[in-house]
Amino acid sequence: MELPVDAARISRELDTLAGFTDDPAPAVTRVVYTPTDLKARAYVRALLREAGLTLREDGLGNLFARWEGARPELSAVATGSHLDAIPHAGRFDGTVGVLGALEAFRALRAAGFVPLRPLELVVFTSEEPTRFGVGCLGSRALAGVLTPEQLAALRDADGVSVPEAARAAGFTAPLEAVALRAGHFHAFVELHIEQGPQLEAAGVPIGVVTAIAAPATLHLTLTGSGGHAGAVLMRGRRDALLAAAEVALAVEAAALATEDPDTVATVGILDVHPRAVNAIPNRAFLTVDARDTHEGRRDALVARIRADVQEVAERRGVAAEVVLVNADPPAACDPALVAAAERAAAAAGLPSQRLVSRAYHDTLFMARVCRVGMVFIPSQGGVSHRPDEYSSPQEVAQGVEVLARTLAALASE
Ligand code: HGY
Ligand code: MN
Ligand code: MN
Ligand code: MN
Image 1 (tube, rainbow, N blue to C red):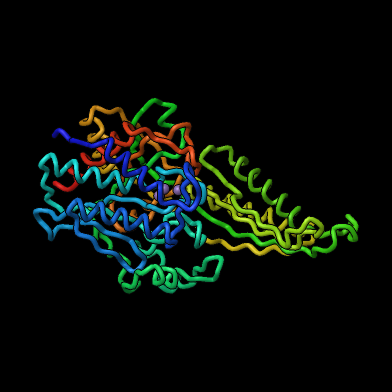
Image 2: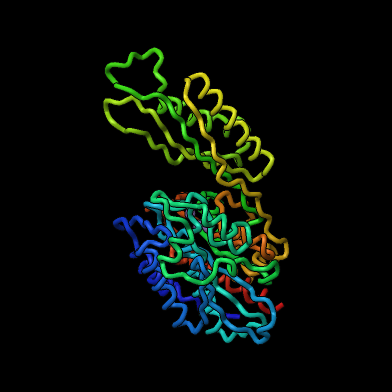
C-alpha cells in the first residue's frame, strides 16, 4: 500500500502547536490545564474534527478521537501521546505521537484503507509531572492506577487538587468513569521521539521499543536551624542546603555504584528557604527521579538513597522527611506488536532496531489495559526536554509511515 504521508503538513502543524507556549520560542512550556494547554488542545481538537473523527473527552480531559471500523463492536486499536510539555522543553516530545497519529490516519484514509476494527487516537492529560508531581496522570487514571480519591489528594504548589483543576479547565465528566476495563483496547502503539542518542548513533531511522524503564520519584525535605549568616559560628550550624548538597552527590554516587548504564538518578529540583543572602538555609526541598530497566535494581537504588539521606541527616543534625511519590514497575512491549512494527518498517523500506525506552511514556500505563508497542524516531544529538530538541521532517514522516502501517495491520486482525 502506497501511503501519502504529507511531511510538510505535519511539520507546519508541529510548528503551529509549538506556538502555544508560556516561554518564548524555541522553548515550549505547556503545563497541564493552563490557558496555553487549553489553547493547544482546542487547536488539536479542530484538526481531529476536520479529519472526520468523532471526539469524546473524559473527566480529566483525556481526549479520544475515533475512526469507526467496519466492525464497530470490535475493540479498537489505539494510538496517541501527550501535548503537555515541561518548562523550557522542545516541540517534539509527545506532539509527534499526537499529530503523527493524525497524519497516519489521514494517510491511511487517502490510501483507501478501511479498518476492520475502529481506530482511536488518544491525547493523554498531564504526561509530565510538572504541576502535580506525578507523571502520566491521565494514563494512570485510564489504567485504574490512580483512583478519583488519589487524584483528589494530588495538589499543585497552590494547593489546587487534580479534580479541582480539571473542573476549572472545563472537564466535568465523572472521574469514576475514567478507568478503562482491561481489554477495552485491542492494542496500543505510541509514536515518540527517542529522547536519547542511540538511533542517531546507529544511523537507524526507526526504533522499536521492547521495554520501558521503571521510574520512581522521591520528595525530600531537610530541616535545619537556620539563623543569621554573620552571627552564627560555623561550628554547630545545621545548614539544610549543605545537607541537601551532600544528598544530591550521594544520589549520583548511588546510581553510578550499580555500574549498569541503565541505572539513572537525577536531582531536578532544589528549593532553599528562606533563600536570603544573609540567612543560613533552614529548609531544603529536593526531588529525586530514579529509574532502571530492572525493577529490583531500581528498588535497591531507592533503598540506598533513603539510607544515605538518613546518614547525612543524622551527621548534620537536620530532620529529613522522605516521601516516595511513585515507584512503578517497568513495562514490556508485546512481542507480536514488536514484530508488527518491524514488519511495518521493512514494508516502508526502513531499517529498524530494537531498544529500551529509558524515558517513561503513557504506554507504560496503557500496558495495564492492553498489549502495547512503541515506535521511536531519532532525536538529534540525543537531546530532549530542551528547546533544541529536534527531529527532521523526514524522520517524523518516516515514523508516521511506520506507525500507519503498524496500525493498519492491527486494525485488520
Ligand atoms: O520523564 C519522562 O520520562 C517523560 O518524558 N515524562
Ligand atoms: Mn517528556
Ligand atoms: Mn513524552
Ligand atoms: Mn510520554
